[in-house]
Length: 200
Image (cartoon, rainbow, N blue to C red; front, side):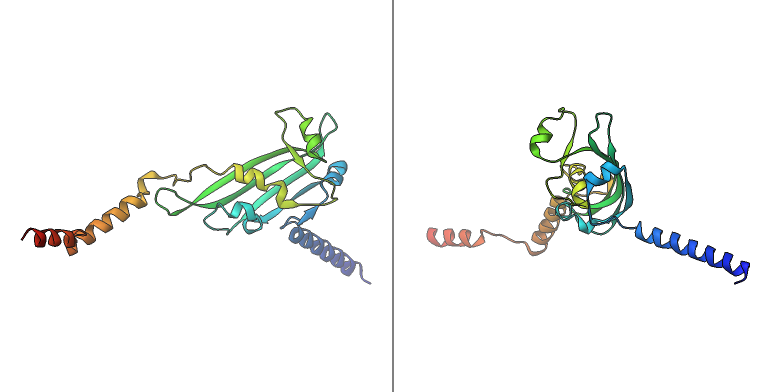
């Protein structure tokens, strides 16, 4: 086989491997073994669809979009298994003032100690966040990030630009009053007529 062909073949195989790796890294695995990953000091990165976060989606106007996720597993200076990383993405919320949809950008750092049980979590210092992995070997990847995403949502969602946010109640009242003026509605007109009949 000619040397030039062998070189071309090697380059082609290398490009194919890089392409496959890029495709595989686009999405995080659905399930992982966090304790084993921590023991091996592994890192994962990829995307998670917003629609995969079922509990989070309950608070959203739409479950379109995805999160870019970086996860680093390892051990801290106390030899505890830990998970650190970052989650970035945009969620769509319903404004509680105008009832319209608006986007909220999230950029959240992650930092938890991986523990086997609630009892072990109770032994940690108060300032340390724990993630209970349990007895199972694998864990749903979404479960590692969803609580942080939910806690990052505002208690009362409101449009960031208040100048273009008209309260929905005011709009409703305005439309109702316009309808009354046009039709000269008198909801107690029948009662007035009956009183006049009794007095005559």
